[in-house]
Image (cartoon, rainbow, N blue to C red; front, side, top):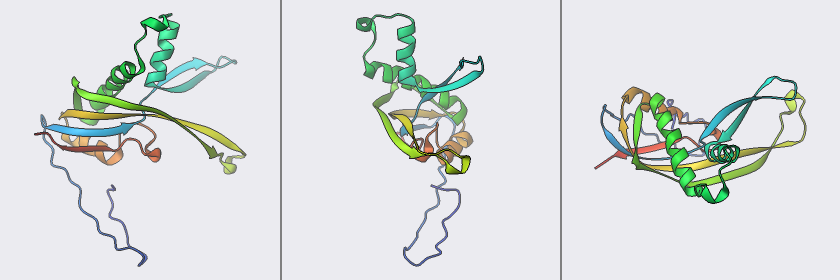
Length: 177
């Protein structure tokens, strides 16, 4: 999906495009699906006392919080419960800025996966070798309510959350019946 129509500058493919302009209204209910990289950003200090930013997926962040709170392992919720609770909360917050709201019981968060791969480092910045990229994903599906049609349309074009270049953030919608 793009705001610009593709240019057919070679005759290898026949390119056809369709205009995408969803007609949304405040209060409208939509069925949606979304694969996202739900993260939180935490700040701490490095060994020199300088502030340092760390990004964690919401599931690992919740597990870390439980360890710090010294919750015994047998009293901690199972991973699917953590995925549902923390994933829902992340999506609820994203909805505030992206023109929609979700209600508990109307969203399923499943399919938690941690993906790791290696990417060549940027030689233009003098860095050689490879570094690992870790991306965790959660699959969301359910029903949302449109609160700001313009903001939601923008989110549909731009995506929701980080890691869009790795296939995350595309929300698919259809009217609820």
